[in-house]
Length: 79
Image 1: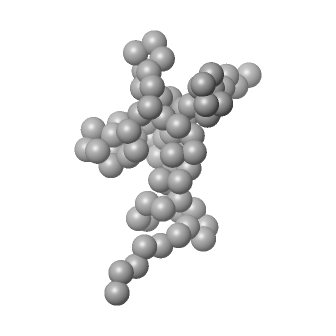
Image 2: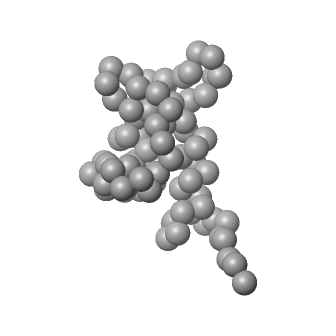
């Protein structure tokens, strides 16, 4: 069984840290390090004292982050 948290006001799927890390292919400890250094989007809510992130924010961030293993990830090149 996989429980899905949904924001009742917006319908957005919300992910705890472990799910964010899983999506990004990193360990939860690495995710926590990214969060503590301000390298991730900010959490949008808490549930039972655990921060939650909007799934769409994490998908977008992961696809665009440097070194992302996502095929065809957008690049940001300045000339």
